[in-house]
Image 1 (cartoon, protein in one colour):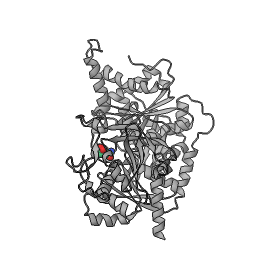
Image 2: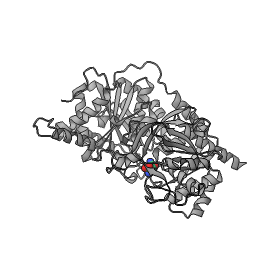
Image 3: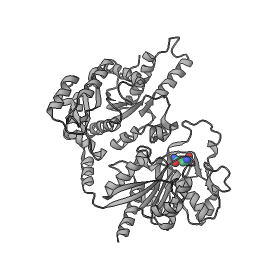
Image 4: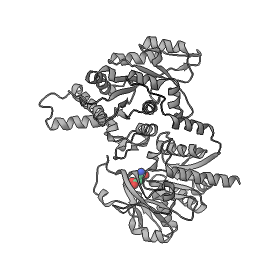
Amino acid sequence: MVRPDSRSTCKYIFVTGGVVSSLGKGIASATIGCLLESHGLKVANQKFDPYLNVDPGTMSPFQHGEVFVTDDGAETDLDLGHYERFTGATLSRLNNVTTGQIYSTVIEKERRGEYLGKTVQVVPHVTDEIKSRVYKLASLGYDVVITEIGGTVGDIESLPFLEAIRQVPYDVGRANVLYVHLTLVPYIRAAGELKTKPTQHSVKEMREIGIQPDVLLCRTEHHFGDDVRDKIALFCNVATDSVFQGEDVDDVYKIPLSYHAQGLDTLLMRKLNYEVTGEPDLEGWHKLAERMKAMNGGTVRIGFVGKYINLQDAYKSVYEALRHAGYTLGVNVEIVKIEAEELPPDELRELLREMDGILIPGGFGTRGIEGKITAAGMAREAGIPYFGICLGMQVAVVEFARNVCALAGAQSTEIDSDSPHPVIDIMAEQKSIDTMGGTMRLGAYECQLKPGTEAHKAYGRDLISERHRHRYEVNNKYLPQMNEAGLVVSGVNERTGLVEMIELPDHPWFVGCQFHPEFKSKPLAPHPLFLGFVNAAKERMKAKQG
Ligand code: GLN
């Protein structure tokens, strides 16, 4: 029998989704975290993903979107990005659990003989393993753990997770558990009506597996009145004050205040038996809303040269980080997505010349690489602000080696293992690894910044820590030559001697980093490098306007 520590006072919220996918369960869960935190509670968001991959690290962005990396080096679902952006929590591998992880643990235990000769089954062994992941997180001293169950009610693969969360009240007491269900109330244009039936069906499906939702968050394109709310409450067995509307908004960061205005935070507090003492601290979110209204600094255009630009979610955190910087600087950031491999170099240059800044994000593999090198060269020569993240820094180094240091054929060995000048090369300890999952340089590493550089100016500190996800590195053998030609190494990891940041001094803003700063940017605390970059782009935009 799995139980939380008997001293634990943690409470549990489980967020499920019904009717259709893509309703924004991740944002809804993050919002719940944000609102409870504003009442002074210590919260942790957690995501259950019902697929058999151990983590999304081995999945193509076409399948999954961005892989979000935590400080402790876990490759996780992009919903963890929402959780970190909406709350103050720093998450770890405990915050993302997949079916793959659950089954590998159960099978390992079986092989070790830990089940003492029993038949190993989905109930109770798999469900116990799932619950133990919730209780483990709870044991870290949180007031509330908010667990989102991926997928939609009715999916075969999420059944063990739903059965596990159904059992939680038995372990911890019903008063310490809340079930929040996110549904859709579609508008049927031909009838001119909002329809509650899909919500009724979805709740019925939840009840069939033994879970009666306490709170309904209803996504809707149109505001609905008391009549619709009453109908939902009556037929779904919930109190009228527990039916909330998730109306479409033009910016996800407006959602916490929208639910607060409907009283979601006080209802959750009351239902969890917490006393509400005074107003919640939502000052940062109110200020952000004001800033959004007052965006009068114009629009900066960022040329975004990537491989998966047709996918909305592949570079989620980078897009978000650009917007965060935009709010603070009072500018709209327009992201002009450019498929590097499709354009002839001259056309690409012409297009990029129009931009106020050029950003090359992380990436893997050969496709579009020469286009990216051309883009980095264009930024360098034309004095266009440039931000190279991970692969984006590597291509900037390759371009500099080829065209400034005259190292013909310079390349990363990821692209050309026979390059005469492997200026980006695989780390010695990576060479012997032949498995794919979790084997990159992952998670937080320190970086010492060089005083007087743009990097140091942006952070205002000597020592920083940022998250990594890569295999290849700047080849230090070429550093003397490249330094001589003007490339400045502005950040290094002192323990390993690995290059973390580079920049070009005689340029408005040309910065590359081997790490992924986007993972640590928040709407209420934009990342310093994104601020530096968008600010340089803003200067260029203003200069162009004369
Ligand atoms: N493919 C490069 C490497 O593995 C860059 C990785 C990235 O951009 N995340 O080093």
